[in-house]
Length: 142
Image (cartoon, rainbow, N blue to C red; front, top):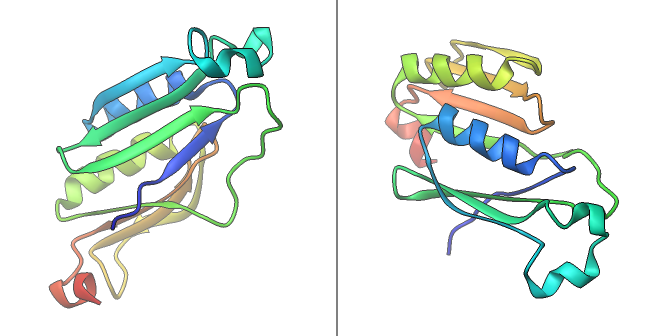
C-alpha cells in the first residue's frame, strides 16, 4: 500500500500541473479533460475543457495526481500539505523558491533540529507544501 496525493483545482489544474512538472523535474504521465469521456454529460458545458485527471511521475517512483473541480463547488486545501523529502539541500532551496513564488511562506526554509532545511509554503494555486532536506537517517526511519 502507498499513498498518492490527489489535488483538486478550480479550473487551473493544467497550468498547475505543468508548473509542478517543471519545478519538480517530473514527467506528465496523463492529462485528459472531461470532454469526450462518459463524465462529460455530468459537468457544465463551460467546464468540459477542464482536466478530469492528470498525473506526474517524479523520478519514476512518486506520483502526484490532480483534477479540476469540473464546475462543482471548490474549496482550497485545508488541514493538509504535500510533503517533499530529499537529500539535496540546494535542490530543496530551488524547489522551495519556485513553489513559494507568487504564493506565501508559512515557515521560511531553514535549518531545524531534525533537518538541514525545512520550510512550509502555499503556492500560487493554493496548494500547501512542506519541504524537508538533509534529514538524519534516524529521522527518516521513524
